[in-house]
Image (cartoon, rainbow, N blue to C red; front, side):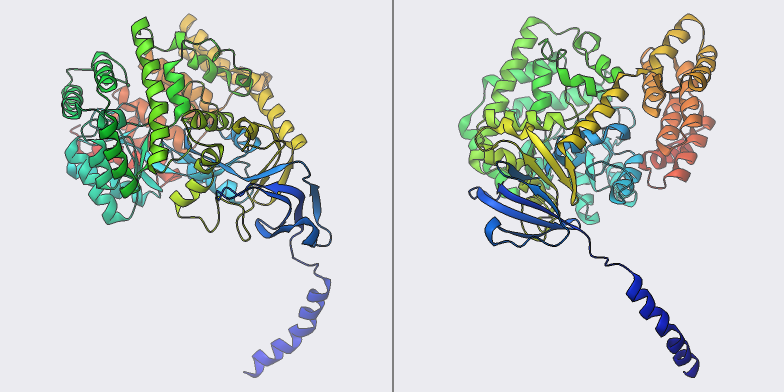
Length: 599
């Protein structure tokens, strides 16, 4: 006791001295004055307001004449400007961290990723620590699909037991939700639904072809993406459409049909029948169920339009493509898309009719009280990070939503969906200061959300000049030629070993001339796999893991090893992926299957 007292006495002068010398830790305030606040609660705009931000929170909101400005505050004159909450894109696929500032530059302060990969967890940590500029991020599981998944790297589930195990794995891996997909069987799907409830993790995504929309809604699926299952559910021939879809899934599972990617004669026939037999009365009943069950809709009209109008040259002439990596832009060209080459003029006409009906359906859903989220499906053709969220808002208004309702689909509604209304979604005291300052009123014209004067993200102010600098840097990045393009030519003309030597030579002598990044090599490896050049693809994935040793590259390498039939290589790669990221559910699942398979 005496020793402790003596120590306290000895420390007291030092404590006093530190207290006297340490400057105030109170963060400097940011004040937006004389601004019109559109808080997206649904109430009228509030004119001539002052918003005081301290740290990353809104400290005070009041009439400018009655609100005191803190000392030493950074003051921004918002006269003739309009303040809205930060926007959320609730359906995103983006895998290049260098381009994440595109979201912030467009006022998109939050995203829901829709295909989980291990590197997202690291990105989120870096963003939250202020080490990386990018939006808040909701992270899913990898896609959980049927035994022959649509997309490589998905968790393949053949039955109810495997469905339950997939849910347990992704929950242990730290995913925010389970992403379900189109080719799941009924047994697997309902097992996933039940296990998700037990594990306390949401499941979201596509309505599988094997179940109806109402069944998915009643099972507790939180969101429906791309209006999957909606047109069929509103048809007077729903049972016939369901049977046809189930037969297609069964044919894929048994190898009678290839794994189709949302096109083909069976898909076309169902679309045509659903369109011709749409029943407003049935739709009213279905929408009532969705409202009752709080089954959120994320229509992603941006990608639906892209799919319907890919033959429109305005897409390839979009000036915003200068901010997108060249290899991605090339892959978006409809002439390079193998899934579009067989589409006839009749097919294109049908696609456009379906999209027009999709617009009508979204408007009808809003009027019926169905909850809607704004999302784009970014990374699909001509769905651009950040920019396309504004396209989506315009399409929502075109479908029949008011500008306020469209804004709410990207602000208030995501906050409600996430259960974070205390922190996000509207402009109110105590909420996180994610805000967008506009030069014109979005309630007059939703297109005015593109007229961004400044962005506040986590209380930090980014002026128009700062945003333009972000865009300029990204434009410079995007202009670089992908090293993958160079290496592919060398592989075709010589061999893969010559290409690898070329990679090292160019990286040493011209380090800024090409995009040497992880994605460039990954895309090259995938391109070689599509060309059935599996051994060369494997060497490129090996190069990528050597140059960019992340769990993602080792995961991709493991997949390439499996494709090449090299079991030992696959096991070593997936084990390395798990060392780097213990939450890599794909690696965990692959190792279990490799262990179970006979050597």
